Length: 282
Image (tube, rainbow, N blue to C red; front, side, top):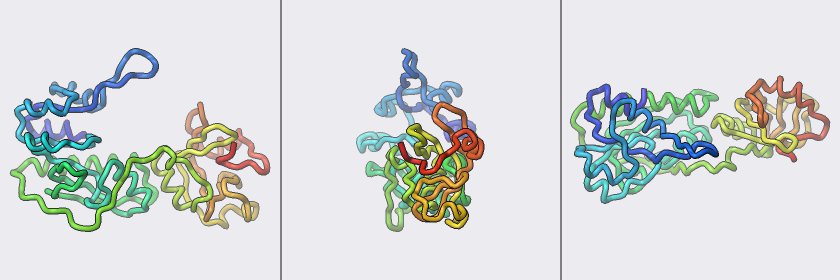
């Protein structure tokens, strides 16, 4: 259940939902609403696209979830807000906390409900919950679990008078928005690092000049590639195993450009690599 629907079901009086404007859909003239707007309309809630609209909504408290923009101080002066954030603050302040936790190899992350401040993710905390990251867990699965835990926490916090929030404690780290180039698999890197990139669900490389998505893979020890892989250049394939800068990456599921996802073994039967060909090459 989404935070918006959970708040409505809990009996909270939602006066207004603010979300991004409708976006153009493909090459045609049509536009599509954000998932938040679509759900708000299903629930019969008014929707606005301008943040300033909250000033006239008659609300006592704003709730921010994955808004993606800094809320200016003058708006917060008119309407105090709480924010549901998907990390254990002050670790991973910023736009991509779940992605950065996976890339860093964190074993634990979590959710926080905090008082929103004008400076990014610096507000004091009302509550937090730890969430373990399962070995090899992908972004979609982890994000889904965080939404579930965070939604329950948010409803619980707002179900009673707000207590005095506690300042964040610890050394901050920052989760900058992911650059698309970070999703490209650079085969000279260690296999363990590349496996984490794959877990973001959008990892890619090239094969014979065309893009190849790597949907699932796991790091294996270098001896696992067999004698044929000894001394091979990064990106070389030994069966469905790719040589890396340290260790090897066992490809499990891939998606060639213009085709449906498939098992790596099925792709290889059609690709038929020849000697000297490498992933990431032209």
